[in-house]
Amino acid sequence: MSFQFNQPDFKPEAIHQTDDRLTNANLTNSRYNRRKKQRQRRLKLFLGFIGLLLIIGFIGLIVTLVNNQSKIIKKNTIIKTATIKQYVSNSSNINFSYPSNWTVFNNHHGLIEINSPITNILNDLHHQVKGRIEIMINQKTVIPPQFGNFSLAVLNSKIVKYKKPTSLQSNQTYLSFAQYPSTNIVGGLNAIYLTGSFGYEFKQVIPIGDMEKLNPLIIISFNQCVNKNCHNVQPMVVNANFVNQSIVDEQTYGIVESIQIT
Image (cartoon, rainbow, N blue to C red; front, top):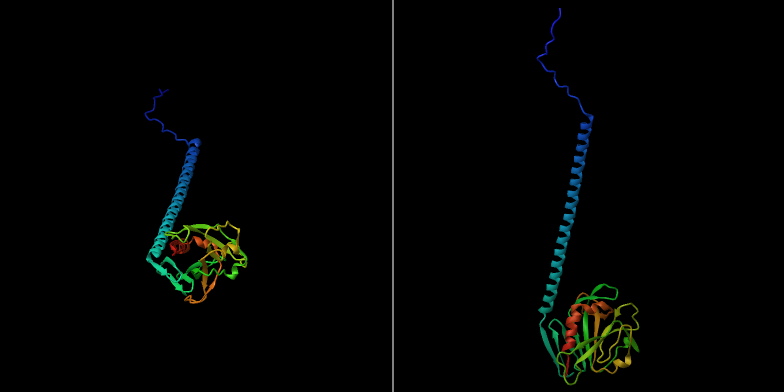
């Protein structure tokens, strides 16, 4: 006996098979994504580090500018604190103005000394020491023996114009920067001479014969404090760059500019 084969009522379940290519592709994508995230994280850290450096640099610049501005303000305040006084010497027939914190000594025999307050002075060894600046006006034209027969110009001479010159003086004078023969340190400055119409270039000889023609003889020199109160001082050699400091370039030269010979 035979039976007719009927189509079964059920459908076979789908057989799920693993495709190795899909698995490998998923693994590759996963690794790529991890590496991408790691690169992004590193880039963010790097950019954050650069940003931090820029912020620190900016803050440092601001602090530097503020400090420099404070120094300028302090410097200007110091200069403006000292009032200007007028000195008249009938015995020497010389008038000049000077800051009130400077002192004047007159022996009434042709010698006037004007001394600065105690200040920091850059010596020939590039060290800051306490000392005073002295302007000597001597009508006897006595050349310091340390000058020798000649000295050496350690800088080019500088022209200073008198503010109110009289008919007995020229309108301007050279300031000449002398290094004495006993000083052998490069850039060492012993004294600044008012040399009238005589000017000298760097390393040029300054002959004593020119100095003997000057009357009055005016010399700017530098003295180092021997004790704490600076009651005792001794001559010193300064670094030539010290002439750019305000106490020289503004106050000392300011006194020179105000000199009147009557």
